[in-house]
Image 1 (cartoon, one colour):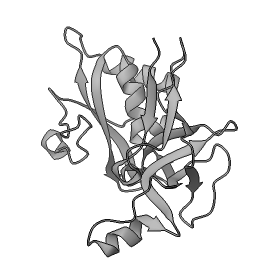
Image 2: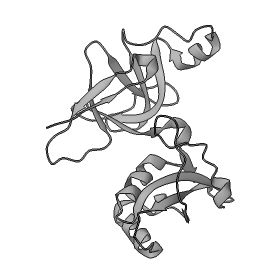
Image 3: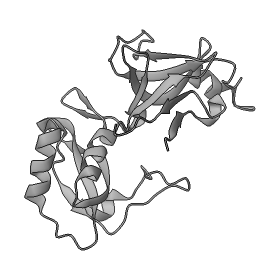
Length: 206
């Protein structure tokens, strides 16, 4: 049995692309190719097209895209620019025109001018046998601007060993992406659709 992963949002009638998962292939960020009659562009902050493999904001155009928010002209003009819906998602396109999701634009951690995507770090942390789930956020830093920090939930029956987790991160992440602190919590708040609540009260754990 194979699963079909889809990507979309309400403003694009829920679907932009789809990806048929391949046997024995783990690829958590690929969402495949666009559905018929739908176009995707990856753009930088100046609305220029990004190069193949370069990360930028995902924009979409097609008959599935909404005409606008009801009686919210200003917000409509903010997200639909020159006919392209700006999703707020960050992604890239490969040589075969497959689309990849790497994070949300508003979640970026900027460390010394380097863009760091918390979703990438969370994926690594969640793959560690010690960790059930994690939430990565940007913590203010006097010299670097922001640095990543993580709230983690430990799997039942597992003894948390911080240095082992750090070593695990070093195997899979560059040093600038490794959280400067790990805060152990009983749970991480979720939204109604099961996603991490990015407004999670991390101050309670500092």
